[in-house]
Length: 628
Image (cartoon, rainbow, N blue to C red; front, top):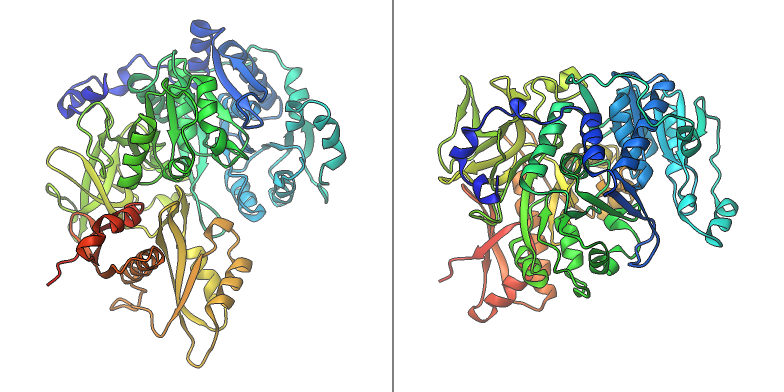
């Protein structure tokens, strides 16, 4: 099916059910098939350093299959069965992909963000009852090993820790220096610690156990940004296979080279890219352990695309914005499409990227709770920039409004909650904690996303806001409760409200407003310092705190966040306008039925283009105010 075919809703709904398609169910079945079809072709490549001529390591499909079998056999030898968990806390590497694949074949994989703090990592390990943890061996300028050691001490079910040594990617003299510079891992660990590479080398390259073609949970992915314990979503083989099918059917084939600088603890990289490669035979390139965050990646990015003859580019708005600060200094004529997700892309950035690179962008919409993919703006069909497109095949999206008599479906362009039913939705059992699934579905099958939106007459989905109060910083979800609870620990704070303020680079940055206890006194700077200590997730630490005489509240005394968002938009926009020596200012922020929050700006006629140049970098909409 082409992109254009995707835009025909009727053609989609008339196809046979997804579970009747000739699509392998399990990870092993897909991997074994790719090894048989494309055994000598490259499957994955990884560079430790970002230079276009730096050494790289590549596994063919046959090698990836064999090493996956070795990893799966190793995990089984460590007591991992189909319902047991192998967690990994790793940056990207060849071994990360082998661990991911082997863990899903042997049991349940649980990727964990290595940027989380030890208490959060430990909480996830306890929630998933992880039996094995794969992580880094202590390495200079990295603290992953130290954080995991602390986390494992508080996760009694972990019996084995396997360490991956990035020094194997280095050559002398650097490789000689690493053992001398390794930071020590202090304290005792109750788990057995072994070297990953040595441990899998002793295992056979064929599975020592059966791989039944039966659906089961094969992955746990934690949601981002929470206080204490992140929620953990369960992903079935069928949901992962569905996401892979979409990529293999609509996006990739065995001739594609995909640049994926996204982390393998995120569903976008794992389910949209890697699972699609497992069904299409595409070659996936991972630049540096930190991906886009790696040293020199942005500066060398276009040369890396030329080196690997990239045809398909995976990005997010923050990365696209950073790339636009660099010249296109290489031959990137091989790139056909850039797939952007995780957060909305500002219209101005969208245009600049396509014009500068000559690359079309397709924006997708998905969420961890739905395995991943939900909708896409098809570049070869009708593309409505600003929308998130139309549902993928076999998916159904409804806009529902909750009433006393149950959910009611909204009409065309009416705003309600976006609710999703597709083969990636594990209806009724999305989260590992049963109570977290309460009231999560309408009609028992439609996942309530927490996003507010509308569907236009052509079937395109437009996101207008969020029913849930998540702050989305560069695609990373932050629960405002973590910030609010930290602020409320301060003896001078009576009420706190945390929201996302607009940011041209990250989409949103966390900020907070507080009301003080009667008679108390504290400065905004003191509260920011307090947050640096008590907000454990670094990405969640607010960039701005304001003390108000009284926070806006609802009739029942709850902090009214729409008013805070309007205040933040006004403040940020006016600061930007003033910083660019413009006289234009935000007059008011309205809540538009179709567009969400819109800033109305007083603009002199001669400043319209300059104002557009400043404000079009934000995802928050704006318009010229009606002026006398």
